[in-house]
Length: 81
Image (cartoon, rainbow, N blue to C red; front, side, top):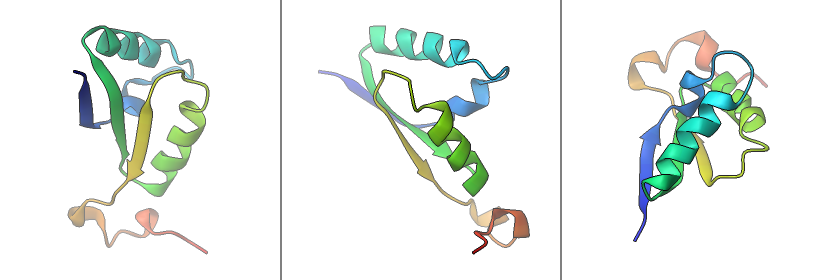
């Protein structure tokens, strides 16, 4: 049996443009049988940054994007065409 973390913000522990903290966190999770992680973006920019950040990480990371209802009407969260 393995576990899935169904909601986290891995990118929020990323602070110096290196993947060291994220990799350390993922290694610890993997040891504790957490084999898949869903990292949730809080804006379109956040989602795009996660795509780049996780591109070369060898763990099972899924990512999604959602806009919290409190922020749905703010211009910076809207997608511009």
